[in-house]
Length: 229
Image 1 (cartoon, rainbow, N blue to C red):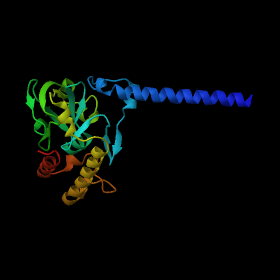
Image 2 (image 1 turned 135 degrees about the vertical axis):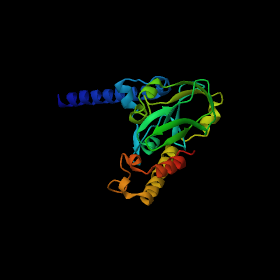
Image 3 (image 1 turned 90 degrees about the horizontal axis):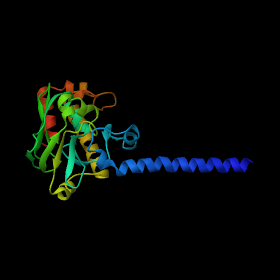
Image 4 (image 1 turned 30 degrees about the vertical axis):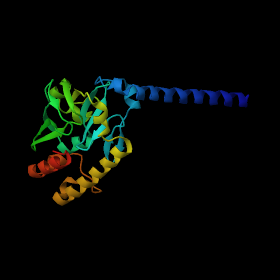
């Protein structure tokens, strides 16, 4: 009797484990499709949950430009574009995004978005080259969405890239992207220590709202440097 119960328990455990892993793999394979929409189910969102790298959120889905924007493939020639968590923390509270117009041509690494804050105006580079198809109306209406949900509902614009393969090869993924983020984190903390310790929390890391406590000229210098303008 005991052996039978143990066997049943083992089979149930294996079945449950298989089901959970199957759902996560299914959600991962559907990532490009899901990226077309700013919405996803709770189970899909859980499977694609960003991880933490050096105190910053990091998503495995997109590819990254060193200027802290990302590109997420949605079809054979289109990508969604957004800013990463490092850029979000660096610019601080956003009052307004000046997004590119539909039909506008952007070059890879060239300025594509203006970010208006109380400290000044920062600019984000486009991670790929191509024609802007549409912008995110929810971010235009509520700029905070790009900060609260930068990898999903907070995407900025969609772009058609005719030479997508070459463009994506110029971007960072996986361990290389994580190492680049760690390096940016260390560089930023070193720069902030030289400016003012008041923006650093206990342990020497930047406070969550450190950007809002910087002098405008320091904020401008840092955003210009790290966002590759």
